[in-house]
Amino acid sequence: MKRTSFAGWPCSIARTVDLIGDWWTPLVLREAFFGVTRFEDLQRHLGIGRNVLTTRLQRLVGEALLEKHQYQERPARFDYRLTEKGRDFFPVLAAMSRWGDRWLDGARGAPTAFRHTTCGKATHAAVTCAECGEPLTLETVRAELGPGFPATLRQHPSVQARFGSPRVLA
Image 1 (cartoon, rainbow, N blue to C red):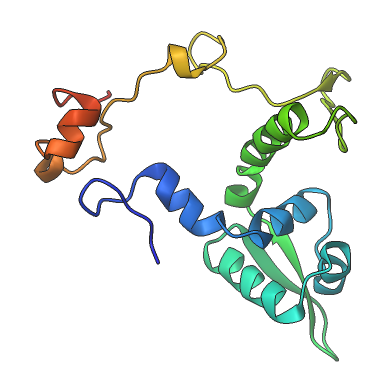
Image 2 (tube, rainbow, N blue to C red):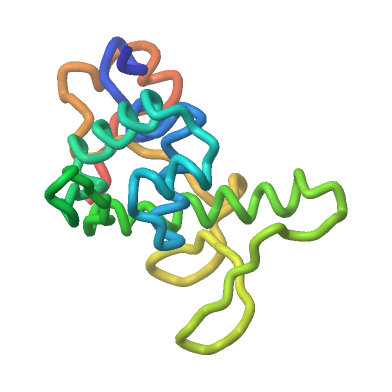
């Protein structure tokens, strides 16, 4: 079921959650980021049922986050490689990891640390403004209607309540 808001128009977060909102999909992607690409290895690392893994991999291939490549003919065996779209999801998981390390680690410390290979320093995800580099926080960001928001819904009461007078980001 597609998750929507604003009289049925899907928003960016709802569309993303619709794609990766189950328990296993982000974990399959995490393993792919760590270089685990073969079905048997994914199953072993995650402790996931074959049927569930098959379904998740089919979805990720269908949505072009992973590409399926045959590496053996008899029997046919495949690995699953990240696409550009799949690699572009890494910052999302890094941000989830950072949040979990801050709020859910029980003072034990991060179970996985990140090191930036360009500068060699230990690091963590930080969401910053693409223009000025300052951190984005709830207090420093205002949501506005984007160019993809349907003109027919701009006057809808729920849209007006959330965004005020209609405006479009350039």
